[in-house]
Length: 338
Image (cartoon, rainbow, N blue to C red; front, side):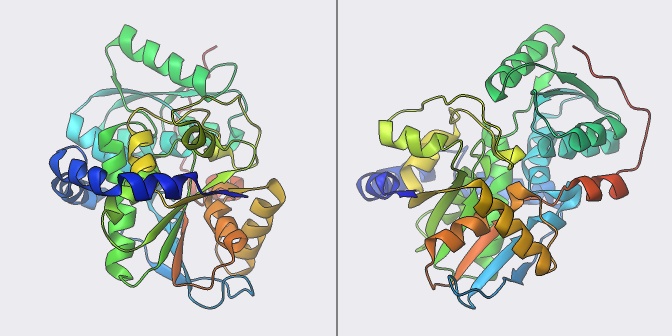
């Protein structure tokens, strides 16, 4: 399943939005270059790996290996850019897991105080990893919407700086470095497939792509196609909480900052089912890439599209329960607060 609404938006709005991005200091090339320089000591430049050769995609599919990123996912890029630029010493965030892990690692390195709000259904291994890194966790009932509301309230009452997992210009600019790297390393790329949860990574890749002649394709779990539904409606819509196996992609509503960027630049949105996500993760494992289900969603989208093109699928994370168990150094854990 895909939507052509995004392509229609692109053709109507691309010229206007490109001019807007150049003029907008939060989204322009200077902001992306500043983000890349700022986070360089805290991230690695992940490689492009040959993808699995399949009948659907052929031999020209590459993988952007963000599962090899510091902290196990691309989230370290946006988290580092925001924390370093804001100069905060106390931080609150809402996270499905990987953003919280990224911030917890940074907090331990920089000596920050961190509270991570988790929604009901957050992966236990990720919650445990956040606490093992020394952060405090707060568990709330409900889904991502309730999680974000609690995080905002905690930031307001404690005076801590709120660093959202996706919907912040600095977080988006940090995530954009995924796109600038892969386009620099493979400038002939015809399409980039990007997993979509909150939308920070897709918005970042859209900014990095700019006027570059590359198709940007967002891939959402079919159980929570919040961007496809929103673009079809012409405005952000909120979906109910979902239980997709892609636990990092359970966002319910497009963000204030991410939505217009994606609306104005994305070329297509594809929805993939649970079986497709698990099959893509299994294919990656056989190929030697240990991706979590959320990290396999972009490949699932490329397989569903079935276009024999020079393409990159972003493997956004590799924080499987087994990896977290072996790679997280334990510290004094702090108990969940109701």
